[in-house]
Length: 184
Image (tube, rainbow, N blue to C red; front, top):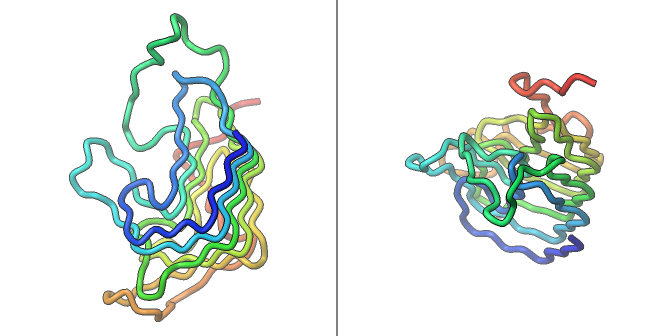
């Protein structure tokens, strides 16, 4: 709670990306009031031999990371009564380092299919470059994307700055059909 990450400089990262916030239905609790400001991101690549499958992304906030199933919290004798709450996360003033790219989507925001909704996730003044994904991947998430957010798709195999396409503003989050919203 109440975390400020400022002037983050990530040259290379693997699955999970420059920053990952993850929870599970067995842990409960909350993550709130997180600000990432002034980040510079380099290459984000997926590790092919990970024990669990999870696609790389520049920034990830996920209820479950890949097919990883954690153990229950050893301090708790019973399962939590509520799903973990993630809210009020702001990512702003982020740039991709020249000649670098993200092998997955620029952002992945996915609440738990069991009914967790990521609330009040905000992106402002962000420019990231991905290899193949035209936008962010979002499900069970309330995401506000500023008009000054740009996701470039780079197909240059040398990681150059050639942009085949760009996505700006509100069209950034692509709903994921595998995770339908829970019934009301």
